[in-house]
Image (cartoon, rainbow, N blue to C red; front, top):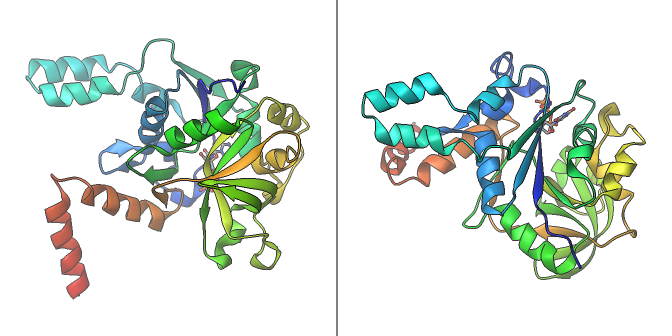
Length: 291
Ligand code: UTP
């Protein structure tokens, strides 16, 4: 029987160089889309998917993330004293159940695969979800919820997957697809950042994964891949054939908040999805369109 997915890893050890100088003293994952930091969207998505334990792999300069998920006593007192109860509620909602969060330090940013490997002792012998906060997905049902439901049927390793333009394959892990059943596509191979001419398809992996314990064993070999980093997709690729491996074509729109234009687009889309803001934002957009 497939073991349930109870734990999730949030790798937040990257340097976020594409957002400098904003990320000089603030983690990329704390950048807000409208009024919520990216990392909180990812945590909310994990909660919606029924995840019980959240493991953050952090690095230098990431204490703001720990603070965000903790009590802010002075602020809470002040809001309560001023009877700003709606704001107080928003602050309190960010605080998970005590003991639900763990923080592990990735001492050197050696790549996403290395960050995930750093969490191995906290995961143990069970499948685990991995969420990259800079991939933000707007959908009626959270992407991880969709994947975990499908995973209950097929088990094994799973990656979230979407079609990208052929000329963009060099920015992604790209799947060599086998048979498809509904939203699931069998993964026969996986190549990290192939040039368009070498890409086996235009099906790209984005930042949601469900991985099995042997992936950690493989990551422990510390093999370097694209960019001389230890890549999660390389370790996953070596699991092809050893366990069921599927790509999941999720329902929803993904925003690449790791780059500036994607981040701006996410802000517009999330603002437009809010009834309290949409009319004002629409009129600003109309103003730009008129030139
Ligand atoms: P990115 O490739 O976006 O790298 O990492 P980055 O360092 O965050 O950003 P840029 O490219 O310099 O602007 C994808 C995800 O993997 C995590 C990042 O925090 C991000 O969530 N990561 C990456 C780590 O946790 N550790 C690493 O060594 C590398």
